[in-house]
Length: 425
Ligand code: SF4
Image 1 (cartoon, rainbow, N blue to C red):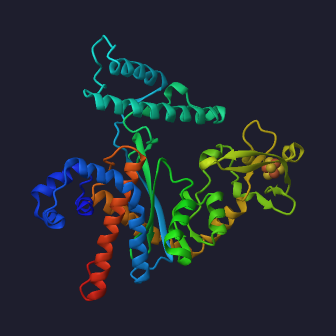
Image 2 (tube, rainbow, N blue to C red; image 1 turned 60 degrees about the vertical axis):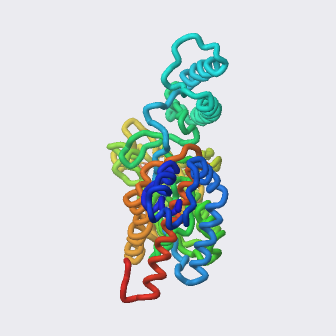
Image 3 (tube, rainbow, N blue to C red; image 1 turned 180 degrees about the vertical axis):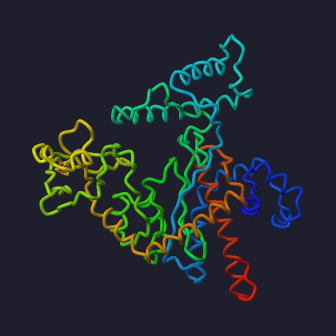
């Protein structure tokens, strides 16, 4: 009954209750069973504990019956708005004030008029108090993370905010560039059959660091039959390429071009024109001089990981008389400095590999596969925003939707197999 409701685009347990009473299809599916409103809500909350297992069983059965070929997986992520208003995000000082007021209201010592944001019922107030504790913890973590950033990338701490409706939801920009609380859902879809092999719903506003967990999740379901992963340029960081090498996965994904903002208007010589000499651990510039190793530092990456970054510098005496000086150096600079991340050769190798015409052709498979799953979720199943609040509930909702989509597709594949002349597309 719930899966049918997800396919109809109804993620609300309250709506499920109404439909179970009023609609023949729901009555038929429930065989006369009409659960209470609380039972529907409780079921949605409990689903977080078993839905992954249900998903695994469905995919494994489909692979065993050769309905799905899991050799090629296509991964991408999409942001889905959290059930929280983007207009009600508060900073540290407002949160502290509100906690004080709410405590006074709960203790019945608040003498002024009760503010609008305080729930009218006692249970609602206690529930909000709990969310405020979580919000306080999350806000502390965000302030701490901000303090650890380089000085030029740090925000004013008073501008760091949290949502009290859904404190777990990170803040980020959605596809319409609107800054809001949201979650990111990752899908690994089997090429050609469009079955979702694995999914991940994370409190994150970007795709960074999700390739490794998705490959591991997919392998836990289909084993070593997964051999190739297609993705976009957001999944070709050095850490991603290392992950694929370690797990023996062929990654078909383009490498992002070096952002143009890294080059000033005066610098006309591209970074790619500097040749890397691995043997001597230096760069060779277009004028034939060496940029020697200077030092190295740690660069922080998603999930507490880090990567070493080395710096290489040219000799100012070489640059002074160089005919390329005007195109090579920033105005006022006397020598060239280049940075190189440990493992950069993996990115260079991937960039080179993806220039082959055969690879360019294969890149089209990504858009034709995983984007359809997102289009179906958002267009037909109306999954523009989550209905429940909190990470456990949004994970349950993502799992229920994925299971519903998979069952529908498997039904189509089975029908097509039984009657090849009547393709259901
Ligand atoms: S300016 Fe310096 S680094 Fe640049 S090409 Fe000339 S010698 Fe090489």
